[in-house]
Amino acid sequence: MRIFIMSKKQLLISVSVGIIAIAFIIGAEIWSKQTTSASVQPKRLPIYCVKTEEKQIALTFDAAWGNSDTDQLINILKKHHAKATFFTTGEWVDKYPDDVKKLYQAGHDIQNHSDKHPHVADISADKLKKDTLSCDDKIEKLIGKRPTLYRAPYGEYDNDMMAVFENELKHFVIQWDVDSRDWKRPTVEKMVESVTKSVKSGSILLFHNDLENTPTALDSILTQLDKESYQYILVNELILKDHYMIDNNGMQIKK
Image 1: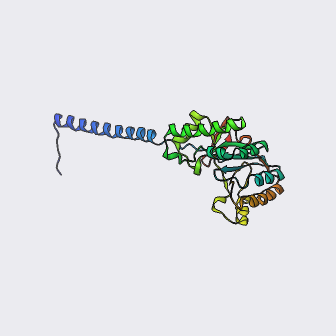
Image 2: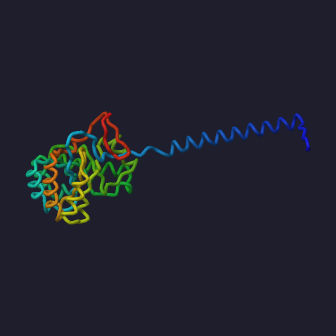
Image 3: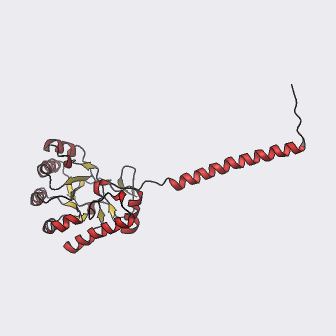
């Protein structure tokens, strides 16, 4: 067995190298944690539904196409004592101002679905604000009430977009937890089955106007939900305005 004897100088060098190595490792770990903390931000979520014990749900319609069924939808909603929230684009407001007034006068709410229906991730924050405010202005000018809710085109959102609405525009961003998928043009039967089996207290339902099967399906859906004693209220009446949190599924919960 060989025994190595280190001189005092060699020992000092070895200890110094060890200290430097340990310091480097610790510094690298701290830098890594700081970098990770700075680069990975919690995901900001819109409101998909609301936690409530009340048998209340919100019917919503995105209006960006035609106006073929406005009167039909108004009559069906009236039949079931239902109020709905219509998210309209500014372009739809420009094309169909009388329809907007009809919906509002029938007790429904008119909210913001963008002005020109852009992909929000593809535009700058300034363009997003300009587009949103343009739609707000058009709706307010027509019905005298300024929107406080926003539904992004295509349901798209990211942290940057959410920050603009939370911190600057002060709009609640609204998604949905029950999707009729009416834009895929399913049969009435499939739409009714899909929606009614998914509804729960606090749900936000998504429909679109100007689609062939939506009015008939809506009537059948509401007929079934009437039997379950659901109330149909506006999104603005369903959501919490303060003292809330949003969980990982987008459910708004009272603190």
